Image 1 (cartoon, rainbow, N blue to C red):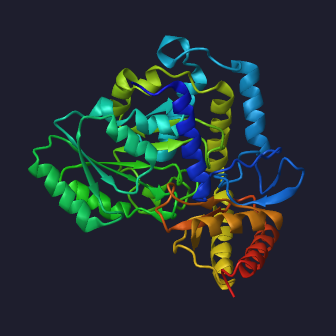
Image 2 (image 1 turned 180 degrees about the vertical axis):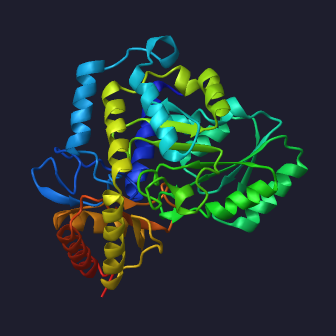
Image 3 (image 1 turned 90 degrees about the vertical axis):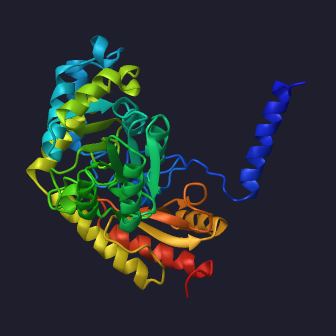
Length: 401
């Protein structure tokens, strides 16, 4: 006899209790202010924010907010439709063209979320005759998108070029018609920047296409903020780029895929998250166009972010903490133990710093950390106070001397 609905809910309660007992329960902290260098928590306290994807500080930028207001006035609140029925406005086409220009591609397709961009990418383009080769630490949305596709699947060890080549050889040996190599441009848990120039060279040697997810790169990585492909010197040489409007590019929501016009046109015909999801809201579209105006006019914000990152990485190590090496504004402060990561996060919050502990299943077991993310809106005094709070909490918890 099948279990009852009551048994099912009891099972869920047991699962949740197990998560709590293991110290892996994720609580949502509530803020009651706009996103910024300092945010106000629900209890009224103001704390330094070190855990948003607000890399360029554009989430509350006056020019971006005003553009959102203007789009509300001129194009309404929402479209109540998908794109191909009656949900495409002139500003949607403008934004798609602007993203393509900014990232050096031919055309762009907008999605309700970057998760949808990856989820709707692979299945329309590739069949069981083809192969996808994916970095083993790629984002969950890439993994899920690949699962929906019938193409043969190969994984290479993280950032391991020799294993990438071995998987390319295996895909060829399996008789794959088309091969797509796909990697995060920047890996969100470690801040590792993919060796895209070398990956491009190896992929080209095997006749493979190359795609990247630029969610943690677009807007600030590279000399003019175009992303990982600019940073690694292969701008204009990537076949498919997916990304988000929800991080550096304004911080609201929405995603995109950009690349060759044939790719984008087929996605418009067959990509299910695009065909069956409401249009990106006009206010987000208008604000995103303003974001690109700001970034194309000056590199001041990405330059300040770069300086903030260099300062914090040096200062937090001088305080005695171990961090993952690199140059990205994602700075993982390694704690290793999940419970201790939560204790450190809780203590620094008491000291006025908002940063969250990451632990399994978000990162591998035994790799718990506090993931700090720097922003262009942080001033030196914010970062000095944050380092001091980490140092005090770290000494109290016995993490540093």
